Image (cartoon, rainbow, N blue to C red; front, side, top):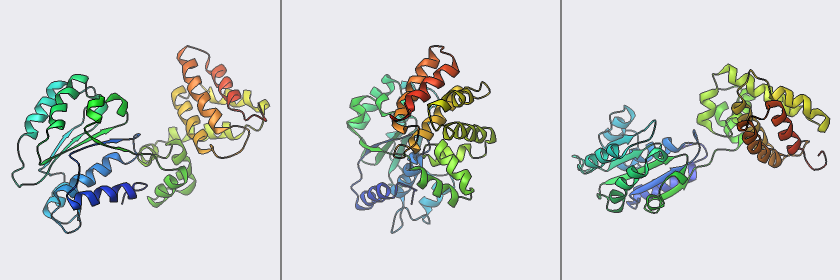
Length: 296
């Protein structure tokens, strides 16, 4: 089972096993939250010939495991996907699988499809071949046309909580304190945490931001913390991302800094930095805005 997605995975697999699986799905969620892993499990299940799909042992499951799936079409645009790519895909969708199986069509980064490409896809989603199932994976469903969204079953995938994410990382051999820092920095995304786990420079930034924020006990501590956060050696966007993770982890905790206030202040700091406000001044304003009422 997928960490944090057990209920949704089992619900969808029951639909597959019962033969009541919709022909098109959108999976929306942040990077590393398990969207692709879940879709891969569903693709395997749709062509599994075992008793409890996906069994992992039948010829179809073994082909998937070795990267040789025959009933899989995948489009993974790095930049915008143009209409020609979708038309080519649609031509391939029109070819029925020779083994009588289900054709699984995976569109990764679906938010990168141009409007013309989405319109080209629309007719196929409206009148799909009975053997085809479409999976659109995206971090921003708002970039998809409403006509596309209305033809799909929509699933919103959320990151894990910090503690649950840390437990998963520990189960994968990461030391507990490092797992805690990674879970916070990745805001509950296991995939993101694993991606940055071996980046020692990133981990040093995590520790520095944590130390600066943890050191704030009152308004008088803000200038020193802002100076630490404004360190020119560190990317400002990364600093704000780490502050955001720190704030989310403390939404329900007390302390000098209020998690909810600080989250709102991070968004304002991004705008100030984009307007060329000095980094230290932007950080100070952010931290003062993030102070709880009794400390403000």
